[in-house]
Amino acid sequence: MNPQPAGGSLLASTGLIATALLWGAMIPMTYALATRHLDPYFVSAIRYLIPAPLLFGLALAYDRRSPFAAPVPWGRVFPLGFGMALFSICYTVGVMLSDPVRAAIVMSCSPLVAALLSKLLLRAPLARGFWPAAIAAIIGASLVAMDAVRGRAAVSGEIPYFGEALLVLAMVSWSWYSIRAQSWLGSLGWSQMRVTFLTSLAGGLLICSLFLLLAVLQPQRLPAAMPSSAALGMLAWVGIGGAGIAIVLWNYGVSHVGVPVATLYTSLAPVFAVLVAAVFFDAGVTLQQVAGGILILAGVLRMQWLQVKTVRQKIV
Image 1 (spheres, one colour):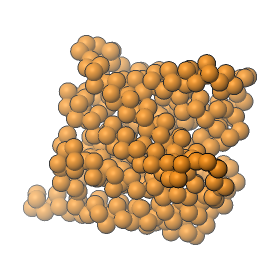
Image 2: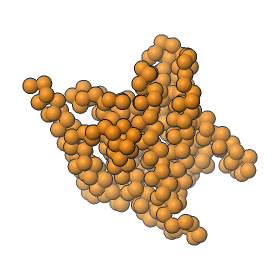
Image 3: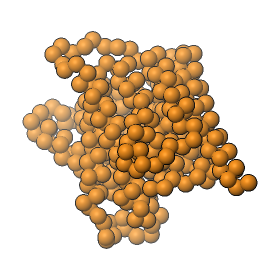
Image 4: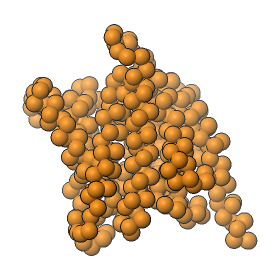
């Protein structure tokens, strides 16, 4: 995968900011679903299948042929789906087992994980201004996270730092998926709609298979009644927005600017999470949270400006 120059990535940048908004809003909605309405593992399993009809329609309309049209390298699609499934499971269980503050801080380090994995797998040079932007993103996200969440009592008998280890594995899994989706499928000339549909479908089927196995052992995990309209609305947002449109925009952004830079934009997710929680869930917004968001945005904009400047110097 060879990311395109920053001068032609304005649409990708806008899409990545929208992705951060969708993923940020998904955090308080997922929390509300898992604590008030549905089993968290059910939410994790079903969210990749909810957007499947929409993603199928987008792929069909964009490519003007079925996304299942041969040849389809299923030997690569299902490993990518496994990467998505592994991320979802590790993230869900990791947050449950970790202190919320530590979990948020660990996840804010995703730009560094993405950068290191990208260097290891692709040996690609990092974008100009990446490291200052990464440091700003980590500090800013940590400020938002530490001020937005409260610690909870540790669960007796749990393995120390096991939750944090799972969160690191989740970040590695998502970065691996993002890199390999472009190098394995994007390099075949596939549209990002087709890439997202087939890999999300594979990941959803794998997670749902695991959930059905858990449901056989623990039937109480299945919904006992039809969820409320509020729960269905949040589930639609989490599925269609967070696991559907956002991943299309994410894959499109990655194909243009690369995984390390794209991950910097998602550092805005905690900021959007706080804003959505404040507007729709009556949560307060503090100056510390605002400062964290400004710091993240400043780092990303500075890096983007340096890239544009570099492109203009080459043209001149």
